[in-house]
Image (spheres, rainbow, N blue to C red):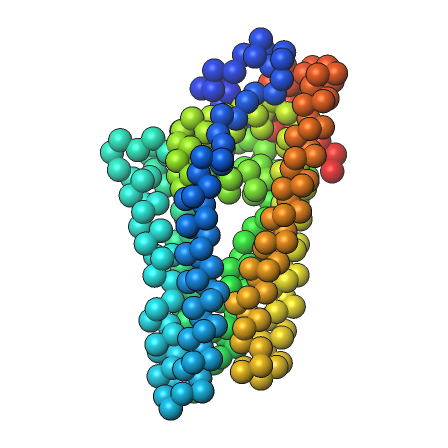
Length: 307
């Protein structure tokens, strides 16, 4: 199979740079802890605590169930819509510094496209759930599970396409058409950090350079696709079965709370695994094996390594 064109020319990474270690990613979460805590708190309140609290307050009130869900649906997702608009502005404004590499024509990134589709599907789901005289409670209750199904399916697809050495027929954020499929986690991290995390184009370039140069880095991201993808689909399937078979008042909390509990646990395990992989990557580079692989940019740029 022909190799895809490399993006590394825009990163400034040279063979001399690679002799001492893998291309660095000059981005840290340490000075962004406050913003992360605030953002996560807003998501937790809007997508977990508030839906549960309002449901049990309104469900057992004198309001009809239809009116109760009209209120629930009217307050749900406002921060999400604001974030969508904020991302679109950052990507489309004239002097934007966070667009995908080579993506100036369309301006938006893959995450924004997926974000838009998800919002439309969730809106349709909410309308279908609250429109009947008697609301379809399980359908409304599995909004988060729908997102997990969508995201999990994409990650699983990327996992298999990566390992099949499949060729991209279209651009995905900074990855051009004609190259090998990259892990879904690669694109998620690139887009979220570049736009929402303020990393900008520089992060996209450094992230790409590291991916092209390091086989172990690519393997790590590929495994994370499987870890998060299969985990998300399994959790979503289990909770969906619960909300459709157990009375609403007994299980409503599960549809909103369990995904967050699972996500927190998966994130903790991911942190441990990533730290171990990065230590292995740096140790291998110092021993020379990884350095030799990394110096041949065109040869190792997107070729998967065995899982």
